[in-house]
Image 1 (cartoon, rainbow, N blue to C red):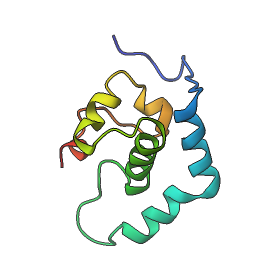
Image 2: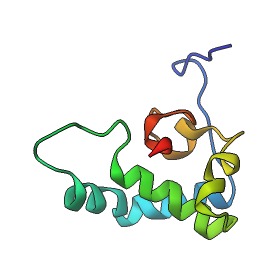
Image 3: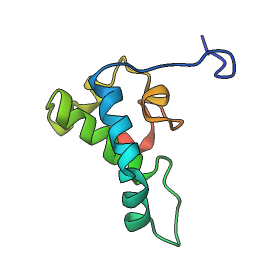
Image 4: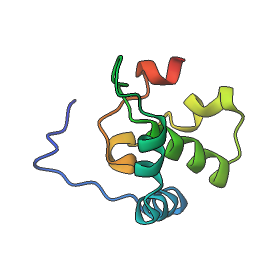
Length: 95
């Protein structure tokens, strides 16, 4: 069942949400996007700054190995947490 994001607002409370809010307040995703994004070529499906936050939340919260990141976020609301449209099965998680 798909939930209409115009009707339901999600709130993430806990360590994950705190880490994301802290990163956003410090401007870390924008800085990473600015430094890593190419001015030519394919635009990534998920911004590099958002992917960095995905990794930072994992490192700061559960310390899972890189191959276990998919399992860590299996039941998470990724769009609500990272404020970016993404799914667990996005191509960016496969590379």
